[in-house]
Length: 360
Image (tube, rainbow, N blue to C red; front, top):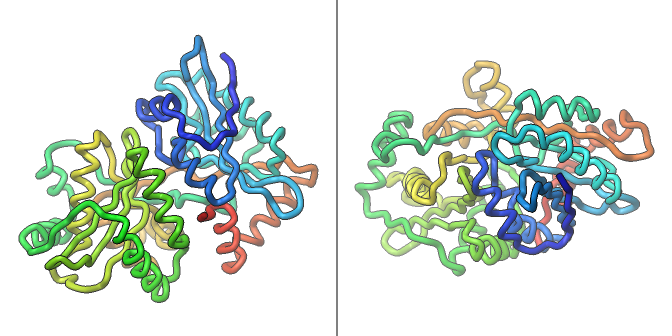
């Protein structure tokens, strides 16, 4: 086995094809996603392990320079290894650690794609500990795309299923989005954030996302029209087995016709036709997720309404929590304490998100 390091933010078809053919391959590990993030000033590092010239594992690290010294980096839904090649994990993690140190990563956070014992053993062996921050919320809602369309519908909650069918019988038309739709959907996102604050990017980011990910055939924009006027929009990213609802918003008009349920139904059908096995409706707010994971009902807090909507389509699913370690000369407890302080402060947390997940 040999490890190869790439720092060029370019589309790598060989790496992407490897991801497409692995059960845990995900678009956030894809090279086009790295190109998008590089437009916002992030450094992209891919650690690829080969055996007889064949890729058998790898990880894409996204990192952001800190104002004074070093960088802070993360691996989302990775590393990814060839199915059945657990033996590559130790060599791959050695290469990741070596690369992290060479690139002056003060903190490296990893959100594993699976929580099996071999992966968790690697984190424990290398002093990774549960992280006080996350890039992608670990709790989400998954729709299995197994079976025919009617079978997928029947697995939904009865109310959601009725709303989808109501949308299908309405005068709504769901189409592929165009460039001129992006500013309108962005304005809806801005308005929604006033009522229920959440993090979103600047307008240029969404144009760049459609340009870069759309060209790579990873991102699709769906728009629901009523009498020729857009009323709802949803961006969906897909690679390999996984399709993910990334961003979206509604005008708030004609909700009685169920445009939001209908647009996700069209996204689900497209994801299945694209060859995906799962449709991920995106993360659930941590406090809401905690209540659900404890077996409680949805709490009456911000984010519960969105979670209720998503849960109508599928089942709650927990990906592994994020784990991190420090390669700083400072004590690990000190670095982790600073990270926790930042994440517990809402203003600093939003600032950190802009640093770690920047737009152009």
